[in-house]
Image (cartoon, rainbow, N blue to C red):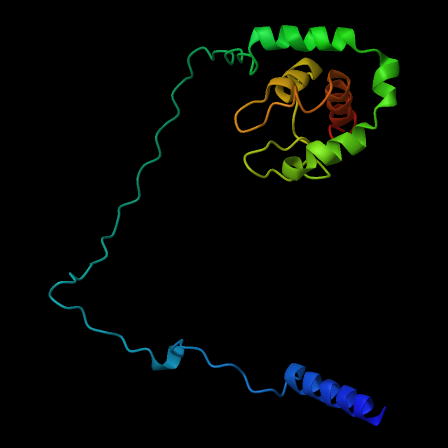
Length: 174
């Protein structure tokens, strides 16, 4: 028993000494700023002279021509995928969606890249808290995949895909 107590006291003493602020500081290979020597430029290193620049006159504003409205954005998901997403939505009832624990499915399937709060953005994933895409596009992206995103059509049921997409819409887009 005394050996155990002695070992514990000794261990505590070693930890205390190792963690105390009086412990010697580690040395580094960095040269202190005081010892830096300014070296003179060699022939290979040309001396750069500062050129004073005259202040430029700011251009006068020209009258703007007719401003064009922004071009309509093309859908990010092909129309055939949107059609399949609408078909999936129509084939799933609200009762089926309510039976799915969407939060659990999200955490199991999506959180690795999107994080538990939807804003992890790993491996090129999008920040779901800033997403504004409609439900059909969301379902199409989950079902077919997009870019680096894996398609989940064989990994999740259509009901789970709709439930998770609705969960993302309600939970992260506030």
